[in-house]
Image 1 (cartoon, rainbow, N blue to C red):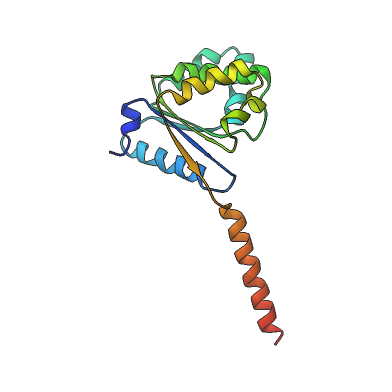
Image 2 (tube, rainbow, N blue to C red; image 1 turned 90 degrees about the vertical axis):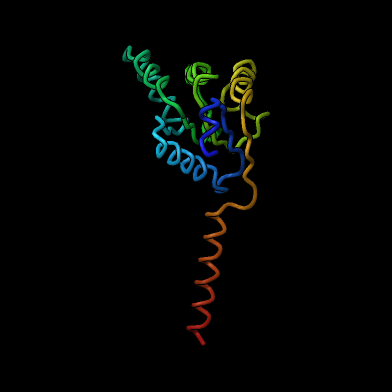
Length: 168
């Protein structure tokens, strides 16, 4: 049944190269969850870390964390594109740790798990994060060529084809 992973408080990790549809799948799952009355929030990882750090500086971090804890599904998009600061990684871990077995989390990433230390900094923190995310988890690998790259190649081929037919 669609959304059963939320009832079971299971996570989904969407892993694969850029442009392979991971974010589209995450958004589709979010829309389906919203359609079933679930509380859902979508963040790019860098945006969430920025909000967490700003909330900490403004002394409203507990309020933001309480709002996040009320969700049924938290989507963390694009983990791995930008390395996080030590504080940012710790705040992200805290959110993931709080969600553990209480809510479902969907993470999209272009990095294999062994490379997450590049983003989170510490091997210990990376291990603890992966331990919580993968415990009750569905791992989906998106393969193939980037849809955007393939689309660009198709448009280029059509332009070349049109240009050569016009010159004849």
